[in-house]
Length: 109
Image (cartoon, rainbow, N blue to C red; front, side, top):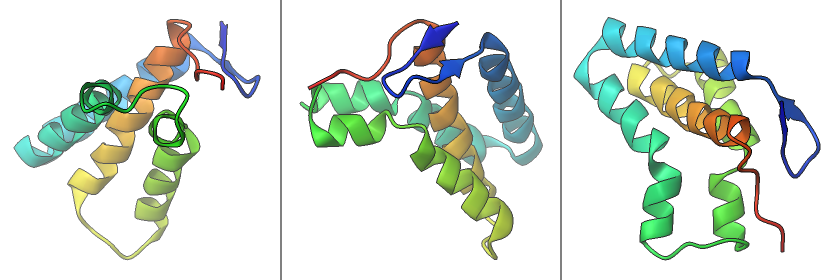
């Protein structure tokens, strides 16, 4: 198990579950959801390419797990019915879980 900057453990099972759910949603709703999940899966790398480097505030925001979790819960409980928004949260959270599983936590200041 890997420990992130907050001190919580990210089990590898969480990564597998998130990845399986993202693939399921992508298959169910088609290309727009697949594109949304993939774009937000690579978002931390895209952020790095445009010059957002650790330990900056924007870098920290892109790599925090609670932000995509709020997107997922908000979509699930809210009145919006647009599946790509849900897969945005799944793709983003899957990437964060992947980074934590591989031992790449948040950069400290």
